[in-house]
Length: 468
Image (cartoon, rainbow, N blue to C red; front, side, top):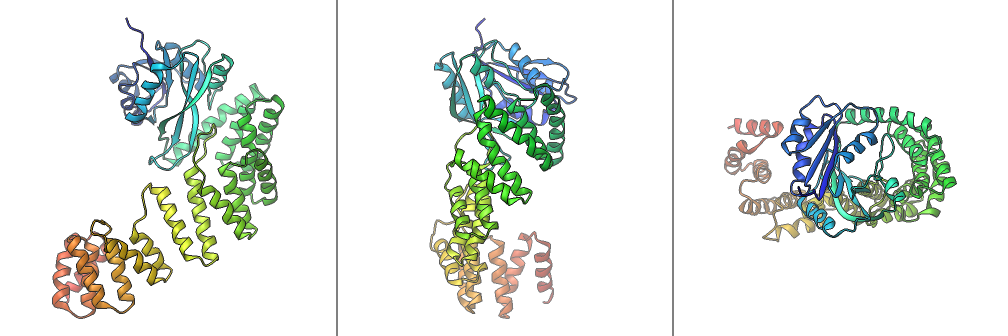
């Protein structure tokens, strides 16, 4: 019997809502699937068996590493790849995995880029070792926030970080997230007693307290994590992360002096930390140092996302920077910069280019009808543009300038290109109605009525039709 090349290893408990999608995404990538079920009351085991997985059912003992190591022990593949039930990969990254193991040396282990995301755009990205040879010393450590990298490093495996991306969809319900944090805290409370000087455990415990809004309690644990890391010359990434975490934490506590103190320490260690520049920008804004704040937030915007060991949501930091910069540029009276920065926020959040109508709407909201009109015209004059709202916006500009006929002509042009667009139809009907051109408004109201969904618009149109 041919030995499997790649074994996919999971632990699950009541993951029926996610498991099918996860396993389907690894179809054609994994030769063997090992699922350790730690006490599901749903049909997670049945779903796993549909993918011909070997299912090991066991009890939950409050130890993620123990469960994961059981999955590794049951695997027979040459290579092991661990994943979570709420992870998915696309076909491109699946092909990269297959290509990687086809020529990889047996003394290598590989990190993937893990993106915590609900929409595929926003979310933190971090490096995590996911793929390694099937070796008896390759085992997870720590009861929660388990890691396999320490054992691999001790065994002499070479670590290589790749651009393979895994989407970790996580849990969208705040209540579910909070319950898991409470569960993790109970596990970590045992670990800090068992391993009182471990920097990883101290850092994880501090982070868990922070997630539960227990800010003051988190401070000494972050300080312990830093002290342990420096004294042991171990876990350098924690020694770099703690000053940033404390700078952020003290900012949330409104202790801006301590926040700036820790930010300065962090700056000496790692001046390229994107979270640090966000913190420095907020501190400068509090101190009304507008130009310094702008400089810091601009650095956040120009940061190129790169994999790190501790999750950082670069996109959210950049959206936050846009929010601050919008206010700062408004304070300086730079309308162009305000519009540009809001465009940037939309592009980051949606992953698409901003429409001319959206730029025009922002200028219009600031009372600049000339620039608004110019933006709308870029789409109106582009026969290939699908931006129907540009016609709507340009018509409003003409109405504000008392050019009713130009507004009507613009809306008719828009309806020639987008004949069933209700917003264009309704604005043109309202325009004719205000001009008392009822012979033109009434047919439009009858035409638009079945297209409307907004209750207020429906009521208003019915009232106008009822006057006849």
